Length: 212
Image (cartoon, rainbow, N blue to C red; front, side):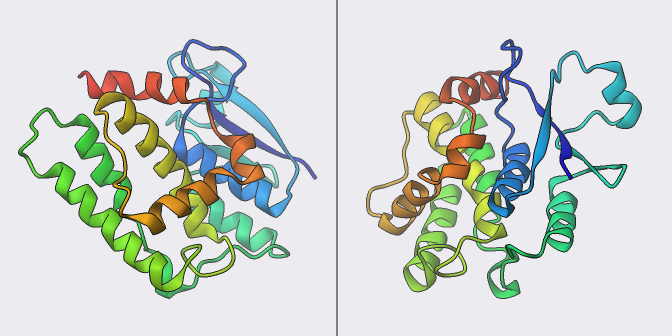
């Protein structure tokens, strides 16, 4: 059975997959589990009526499972794990929150207008913690195999790399070798290439937030 999923359409580029990291997380999960799916691209600035009727909050990702539309990437990933256990992706509870504060630290830093406000250091601290973890447990968060924690973090690291490179000419320090190797490993995956938006769409997505 083919699942239906609503994801962000690229801003101003009809028919192209947009830059939402939470949509990509769900798409990655579907790809890794080899679950067939049909994609509906949603223009978030002009949401179609049918979409708002099934989903009044208007948020993506949204997935149809057994005739029921379900929102929220955390909830969706949990349901997919339960429904398609043949390819297990559950992260061991001990490692489930590794790297979970990186995205919010990145958002604060990329939007920051004050170089002395500590947001850069806060992000560095989170990345150093991830580097230490990967040094001890890598190459993935839970060891040798990719799990849900990696599929959640991968799109966020992709946004971090592109947005900070573009808006702040900033990149992950070279001495964080385990983080750098980890991102290369994640981005090289077939599922990642198939589900990621081009860099220019990511930049266009962040521009209004950064320039606000």
